[in-house]
Amino acid sequence: MTPDTAFPPTRDAGLARLRDFLPKAAGDYTRGRNYDLPEQGHPHVSQLSPYLRHRLVTEGEVLDAVLGRFSLKSAEKFVQEVYWRTYWKGWLERRPSVWMAYKGGLSQALDRLHVESGFRAEWEAACKGETGIDGFDAWARELVSTGYMHNHARMWFASIWIFTLRLPWELGADFFLRHLLDGDAASNTLSWRWVAGLQTQGKNYAARASNISKYTEGRHRPVHQLASDPAPLMGPPHPPADDAPVTPTFDRSASWVLVLTEDDLSPGFVLDQMANPPLATAILDGAAARSPLTVAPHVTDWTSAALDSTCARYADRLGPVTPAPEDLGAWARGAGAAQIVMPYTPEGPARDLLRARLADSDLPLVPVLRDHDAAAWPHAKAGFFKFKEKIPALIARRQGLSLAS
Ligand SMILES: Cc1cc2nc3c(=O)[nH]c(=O)nc-3n(C[C@H](O)[C@H](O)[C@H](O)COP(=O)(O)OP(=O)(O)OC[C@H]3O[C@@H](n4cnc5c(N)ncnc54)[C@H](O)[C@@H]3O)c2cc1C
Image 1 (cartoon, helix red, strand yellow):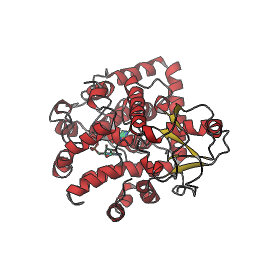
Image 2 (cartoon, protein in one colour):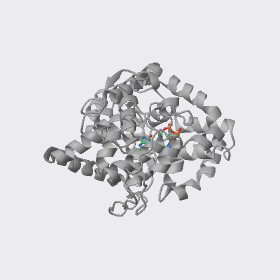
Image 3 (tube, protein in one colour):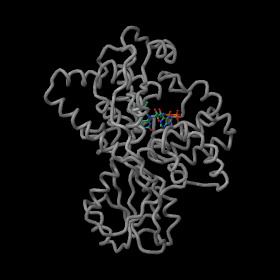
Image 4 (tube, protein in one colour):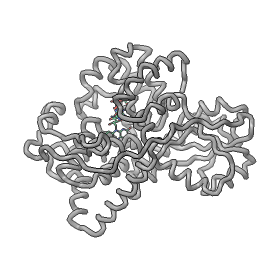
């Protein structure tokens, strides 16, 4: 199956996936979510991640649908997983230097590929699924051919990459970002760091043959092939957390242009807040910038088609639509705008592009936060287990306010 047919890049396809998954979001997910069963189409997990990552369907919509059907207690596991995404995004947003450090580490590892041929051969074998390690090679091929990998397989894969193959974790994170349809700066970077022992410092994740065999129903048994008792990687302490961002005060009736990135493809919550439609809309697609290497065409094609489907969905509300020019400020001024308003773009490739293209702009930029993020990110200060305690209150707040975003 090609990525296009498994995950059509439209909101309707995301909503259909959510509808199909909904009956399984409680008991079935709780019992079966750790099983990696690609031949059966991963029946116990939602595979909503490409839609959630680009917000063709939002976290809020998924939570509302699930909790409209089940109590928080029965769907707790699934709700927590959705909040892992929110937590990682808030954590990275408040420590942007961790994203910069990843990019720096990746650049150094890529330099080594040019000068160390043995190292390059090992990296290529890992990316092609030619290591001979049972399971690992199948997951590499699944990722490259479908754009998806199950969460448990991502954990095993990352662990084997780091501790058995002893390749730099940044190259593994980059391999994922080049091929995952849901490739995301926060979830990917911080999950790789978590497996390595850099995120929960001193505590790494060791893949075990028995665990792999159990949760692949015996399909893979890499007995005696994996590093046993690997030590965690060492790194600098976490930087102190910045304050959680807030939406700046802005004039809802002043003239404006919209910038749309692939980070939020449901811009209705911004359009609804403004007195008038935008004078024009620029599309800033950061998918090709997810890696310094070539990002797989199935990823860039998917993101580009998802952006197109969003423009079609909002066609009567966006004004003239154009690919984002190099100088966004000059473009916005030329359109007669007093401000640039957009859904908040978190740390990651699209934000990096945005910074560069706004470098010469003196127009006010208004990144509008969704209520979901604004409520949760102040709690993304320390570990997930502290954050998790806030989930019932965050849900109660959502339900009290009947938030649509
Ligand atoms: C090494 C590694 C790299 C990862 N890279 C990414 C990435 O680039 N992008 C990404 O979206 N997720 C990433 N994840 C998290 C997780 O594996 C995927 O979100 C999940 O597998 C997506 O499949 P699903 O939609 O079927 O998940 P489900 O289990 O059905 O979960 C529902 C949703 O909750 C969120 N979610 C679930 N588990 C996690 C988690 N552990 N962390 C964060 N969010 C979660 C996702 O948005 C997911 O779509 C990574 C995990 C690991 C271990």
